[in-house]
Image (cartoon, rainbow, N blue to C red; front, side, top):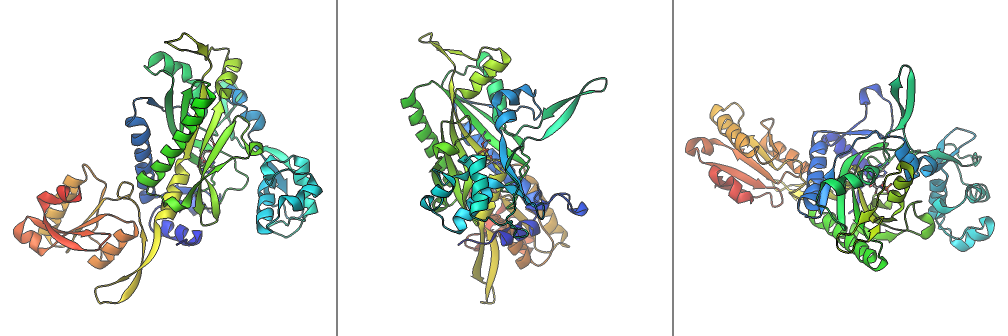
Length: 478
Ligand code: GAP
């Protein structure tokens, strides 16, 4: 079942997963903060990623590098000259958008075929991102693409809009230097390639992981957390030899590994995942081969993650700009070469959004009075559910119940994220936990006070309750 993004956003706001950014000042649309449950969900996804890809492997190391870098890095990487989108303005109402996205939407909405457009604008693909500015201009006018805000068809010519956020760093006296907030985390891995090689036991092939904030001055942020200007990435660079047969094998390997991680660790619905190979004209300027991992969002199939073959482009560029040798010497053969690179790159912010969308459900159930009711639930896997246990004293004024419940919270919270809730009728408290898909609710009641030994434990999937010994809670959930 697919639910509208509006219902998911409403649930996320109501249940403390996300809050609009700087809400009390009412400004900066399409920016979000993660609320208490969203923050925990993010941490659980990040932990699942770090554990699977870094901790459990012998050939992977992690990095934690800074957001601000020497601006030369971005000259070398090509981001200063090429990391841009084609910006157009509506001459009538000043609405701003990306020319390629406007065209893509128009093609999809009107189900245009390549045959229908190629004579008019000499395009040889249905990927407007790969077209020249002249072709995009011709399409906007030939096909009378309307401004989504005012309906006018009067667009300015596309111009290059660089997506990097610029800021200034104080150097000396009143001298300031332009620097950029990083638009991807990957570059630090290339910059530190030699440091890793010289200080660790890593030998090719090996992998380096980095997690952190990235910033892009997106022209059209939107769709909740999908496209935002400040987001987090989890990126891996896999350094390998330049052997076409091998890197084709490694690419396939990465594809399978990534697919399995989404399905088995994050519990994403298999039928809503697919791989799409990039059209050669759509490839990023540094990539020779790219696969998008796409997810079926409420607004269609869109990129969730990507896996790109970056060749030796980045290390070659940094070698050229920094004058530092980035070559690797094979300890067995003595061969010297600049390693090639495969890059699987995840958006952590986008992963949080996807986990919420995938888990969200509105289901019917029969309540204690045999009446049908609908409950909103988010079917998170136990590994990533923000709260693992809710501890609920039945009567909050009963000192004995409170004492037992607090002791259980104290003991369990050493290993699990728990919530103590003594507010409202017990049925309402269960509903609240169902909405965020807490796997277990532990209720302390009168009998617990009499025997000082037992509680009831409620399983969210079956809604069944069992009476078990407090000392057996950990065994029970394991
Ligand atoms: N280092 C390669 C790279 O940055 P990308 O496809 O531009 O490639 C990788 O970004 C991932 O980062 C995307 O698959 C997506 O999950 C996430 N991402 C990119 N731009 C984003 C944005 N504006 N908001 C949220 N996530 C974004």
